[in-house]
Image 1 (cartoon, one colour):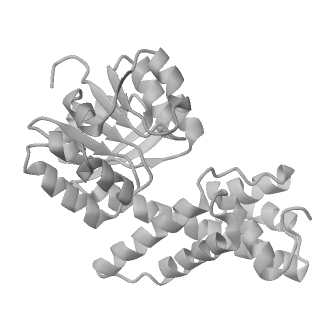
Image 2 (cartoon, helix red, strand yellow):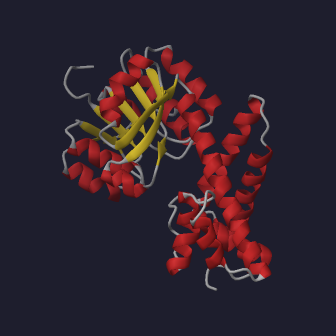
Image 3 (cartoon, rainbow, N blue to C red):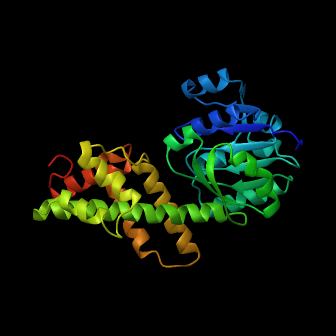
Length: 303
């Protein structure tokens, strides 16, 4: 890698990836992107000076660091192992950064396979929302050795406000799953509590008032109940229920493999499965409230 800013390759200009790529270009990193069907999000990135290639192998050849910002392990595995994938172009000195929420077992296999070609694989999943991505204020939890973390920190700082080295290779994805388990547990309990209020006649506004004044309060609670009470807004936590179901599935696999208890994790996972089966998979997390409306036969969102 040169002493100047490294050449960055980027896959995944979605809700999070667009802001990340925008900030990398704005802060002077030479950027190359590999696009798929939807070219719309790339227009301003290309206009700002990014280059485009057609395959993931070409992207690897053109880059010092390749950042992957896709949904999860199946998509990551296709990018790495698929036709004209990154593995076919892996070389000594290349670094691949996986910012997805992925299965730790898949991460470990990819890391080992790339290492045989001298390529390092770093897990650096993200926290916060697309709004902070556009502002360059995401959080990232990085699993890497000390030297690689130091090498990559200026890259992460281009789109992150908080860059946290959580441990060695693999620990980033593990911490992310645990983080999302806690967040989705709060969301699930919040939705169930609102259903209990609606069914019993207890005021959800008074519940919000008392929770907001005490130790049970949280950002997740406010993004779900606070936003809903303000205007019926169910988009406060912009993360789909289909992705939440996937993440909790990965979490339950992770704790089972340790092995460690996953009693609450299994229950939260099944609440996400229920919400998806009820047709809310493409909606955001606060639509757990709508799922509870169907399950309990109550009116929560528009009381």
